[in-house]
Image (cartoon, rainbow over all chains, first blue to last red; front, top):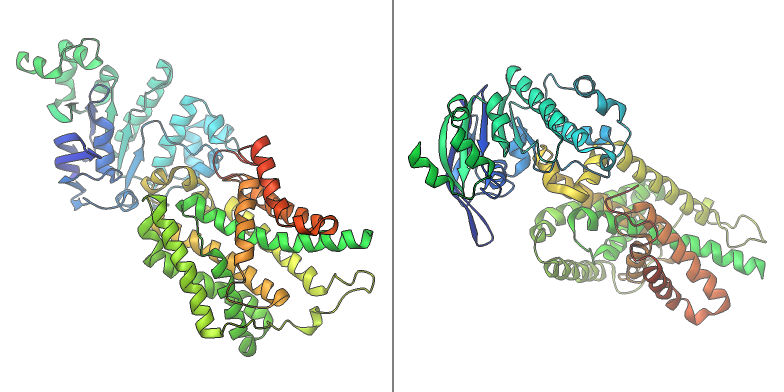
Amino acid sequence: MNAIEAEGLHTYYGKSHILHGVSLLVEEGKLTTLLGRNGAGKTTTMRSLMGLTPPREGSVRFFGTKTTHWPPFRIAALGVGYVPEGRRIFPNLSVEENLKVPLERRGPWSIPRIYKLFPPLAERRNNRGRQLSGGEQEMLSIARALLINPKILILDEPSQGLAPLVVRDVFRIVSEMRDEGISVLLVEQNARMSLEIADFAYVLDDGAIVHAGPAAELARDEARIEALAGATAEGWEERVPAA
Amino acid sequence: MLQLILFNVFNGLIIGAFYVLLALGLSMILNLSNVINFAHGNFLALGGYLAYVLIPYVGFWPSLLIAPLLTAAIGFIIERTMVRRVYGRDPVYSLLLTFGLAFMIEDACRYIWGVNGLPLTTPSSISQPLSSTFFFITAYRLFMVAIVIVVVAGLFAFLRYSRMGMRIRAGVLDLDTVSALGVNVKLLRSLNFAVGIFLAGLAGVLAGGQIGLNPNMGDSLLLPSFIAIIVGGFGSLTGTLAGGLLIGVTSAITAVFYPSAQQAVVYALMILVLLVRPQGLLGEEGLVI
């Protein structure tokens, strides 16, 4: 069974048409990455999957259950852990309180186990969210998603704004989660590092999937990764025929 | 003179306690659902009338709990059937809806219980003055203050220590993320609304015992409660608490020296606070308790 099956998603913000028929699959137990430059529609895709910005057309299934038009909390209750873009920790709550917000689904994750995995959070348990560093906020955001004992973890640009060393840590934890049997959908701009840990990769550009294939294969294609990094002004589409 | 000032300060605290009960509920609903509930004062009246109906059957003390609970249940149903439809829309919709609700509840009370005021009988054991010098300190008034203290402390503990309280505080800033973490935010908003209405219903029973019941008894309390929220600072329930007591006492002390300014001073206080500290006394981003 697939963890996520999204078919033909068309999503709008008001009148702007952002996603033009995005389809993607996340296999159970695999780490799938969705790459793309700024403004490609990655976050909109995540929000469409989570029901935060419901698609106008298309369908979403989590573990075979059709969730199109469900509110986010029902989708999450299926076992979907969501780490939003910008981390979105609750700044006015303490670390410990942040960890008590998620729905308590049964499973191996508990607050003591979280503190073992992320010792800095244990040290700062009584600090407010707004007092944490970027790396600590990222840990807290991942911890929060783990506490609903997810079957799939969806992370939206966890490396954003973090120091390279911290990014390493975050990516190591993400791949450990996959090894624990949690399916992962990792949305990233940082193509090189994501491809190192991912099993399968999609590339999104201008609201459409422009590439799908094994991560290792994409990792060998320097030209494409250059284009993804956004270092060149050329469009992704122009690169595709060359491949 | 001293006695007169004390009398007014005490009176001000009592009025302030009503403002606090109303304002805390208004504040909770406004913070989580972005709805300004203009029917809040009418829920207060409804609470008083329900107690009036219940007292002959179950007595005063149980009514003090049951009437606000029934009011909260009615609030819960109204939220589920009507108020939730205006969430996320232009604020004009929620203003129109709650204005309409205010008239509907007021007229329902008038239709059922009549235009004239009704007395709410309080037990004789707590109606006597405690001393002849401080004749204004009846046991009922002391008891009212005690109830308000207990309820406010309970509310703050609920928001501070319970998971639901944490979810409410988190939802004030970012309800989407709370929902994405699996929390049923529809139910959370309904329950939060009901808690706010419970406080209004309780204020209604207490006020009924003090000044009697009439269909628009909440009207004169509602506007100062809004001001208490502004003075205390949006999002800060401690601020709302301080704001309610402050305007109650300020208004009562003004009544000693310059009675005709008793109402105006409340607005003057609001203007002063907004000029000096526009975010309110304890205003800060997020729900802080």
